[in-house]
Figure 1 (tube, rainbow, N blue to C red):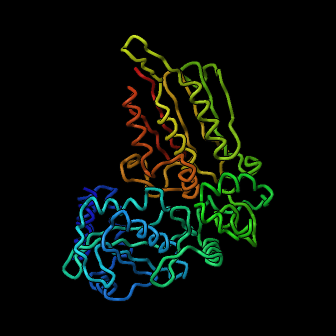
Figure 2: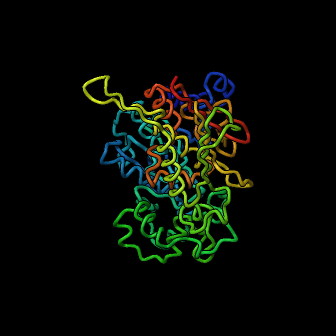
Length: 441
């Protein structure tokens, strides 16, 4: 349905550009959002055919198909377009189904292909996530897929642990000077709060050992690390942990991921765990922990708490093998906890993420309401995602906490059902997002 809708949008924009009201009425919110994204920079057939007839450049890339051997190069191009190292401030265009000379390659443009192209945004291989749209278009009498990539507000963007930039018609790994340019670009944009400077923090509040032994091996490919001749400050700035080599003030991200005393600067960056012997908040508390540390430390300790309290029964009578029966699926805990930490508000509050474990349910409460495209009305719907803290989300993906973006709630629902629990309940308002996981009946 989603890929077919892309076809409709492309057709509608080309043949009936003023029929917006009909589209708003006929299509649900997720498809409206994607349609507006496609409309944000929509090229006419004539413009696209001119691109095809011209030489490849820093804004144009052509691929005959999207086979496994070519998809890697296509992702490199998307990453390079997003970095926009030349600061053209214009989108890049990737054609799938075009030969090097711009003629059609007769590649079949299927719904599956369009979905695979769109997944370049959400599969976590390109971080931070690129802003891109995917369309099926008929150009030079043949169908082609057109991927339009917007310049990123949060460079440098990486693919597969490497920063790619566009040099004329080709992609290449970023040089030291390229990285410096990209860091400077990021400094002068209206950047997300998670990479803004924390003025009271100093470079010494970042753990160099943690950065070099844990973060860098997870963030970059081995060959990039071995060939790296950048200074410590340049590497920190490239990873958005400090503002710049010349202004080595830690960012919120830097303190969350690498801070030696994170909560001195970010008192809200905690997870409060309460195990309550009852069904009301006023009932006796049997376990109370306020979990601090870096992002990884907090998540690890919170998960250990959840696992410790997740009573497991072993049924030795149900069959030839033992059946292990947990009160709650641990995957559901993990997904909701990661979402709570990733999407919470860190500005203007001292409230921690709260986990309240009652006898009949577990509540995980995240400060700050929905953000961007997500509203109380469309919360949890497939395809509706937005990121208040995109760089924190990227780090969680990089460290393996998140496998793919936008799947947490769906995965939670699936795991709860498989474990025999009721479907999770969400309370969404401008101040908080709360998820209630109920025990088995």
